[in-house]
Image: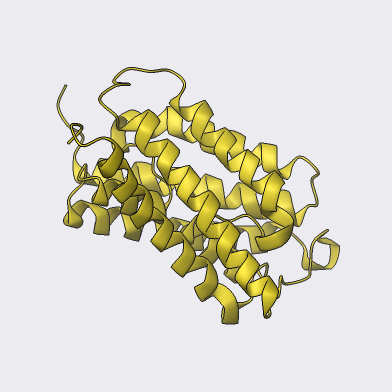
Amino acid sequence: MTAPRPIVKYAVEAIGTFFLVFTVGAAVGSGSPLAPLGIGAVLMVMIYAGGHLSGGHYNPAVTMAVLVRRRITIHEAAGYWGAQLGAGLLAAVVVRTVIDPAHAAVGATMMLRGRTELAAFVVELLFTFALCYVVLNVATSKDHPDNSFYGLAIGFTVVAGAVAVGAISGGAFNPAVSLGAAVMGMFAWSTLWVYLVAQVLAGIAAGAMFLALNPADR
């Protein structure tokens, strides 16, 4: 099978990230009690839809982990990051258009101060690491070349994280989601760095951990 052209990979990453961020904004903004399940489900189906073309990252932290794991070049990673962050911003703008602020179920911006700032950093670090670690093991390991469970495993990692720590940090686990959430007014711009630093560090750590635990899988 011929490898997809870079433009195809970037388009797939943009589509998947768009629907992920849009689902986050629409589900949370409308106050759906099933928001964690909906978010995990859309990630799962988008991974099944585009995983064979781009790898189905839809998350700059995952791309960072795959880069550290040496399954993507820095040039490709830069293209992925551009597509993911651009799609996240576009999705946020669309959410602001379709969700009436006057009737939004969740209108307050999550503020982090002192201990809550540290708590948010820790839980974003932990669950972003878990997400990246799961992706590397189920979607890039040579021990699972043709498995059919990778999308479900990745999607339910997000569901578990959102249920467990969503009330602490908002449960982003993804720089594109974090940036989109700031545009949608869910996260404060002044504390956006907490999410981005934790998530990037988690991606690097997950990639390094995979290499340490799987030295023969290069």
